[in-house]
Image (cartoon, rainbow, N blue to C red; front, side, top):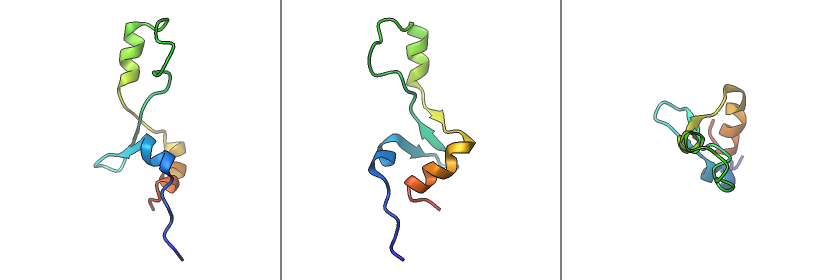
Length: 65
């Protein structure tokens, strides 16, 4: 059976930490920023960890086992 290909979109959106967790960026930080508070924009800057429920699907798209 051939190797599974990594999905290009997933490769751009997710990174894997040293402990095996998957990091993601927050949404709502690309446009219409004038009405959002400084605090809200600052908190959207930081990376988040994906939820346990989504972990299996993301790992499949990243071709991880």
